[in-house]
Image (cartoon, rainbow, N blue to C red):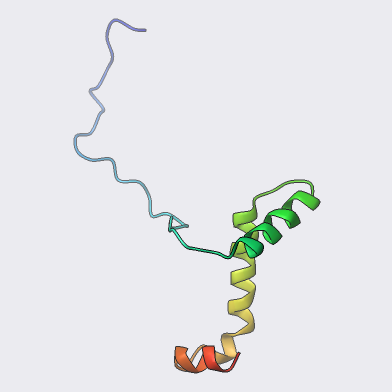
Amino acid sequence: MRKEYDFSQGKRGAIVPPSPRKTRITIRIDTKTLNWFRQQVHEAGGGNYQTLINDALKNHIKACEGEINKPFSLMIKSR
């Protein structure tokens, strides 16, 4: 450890991280569904089941883009 440090270029105030590409949330997912995603990652030899879930959600959104202008309640009922 140094005896002195140079803080002449330091900036005061809170550190503001850049805008995150992902947002941390807490959701409840059926255990069987979660286990299926974990199993897929395991069988593939590794990876991240959360990324797999995110990709599945993105693909679902792309598949539904034609329906995206409908009211949400109609989208749910049509499934």
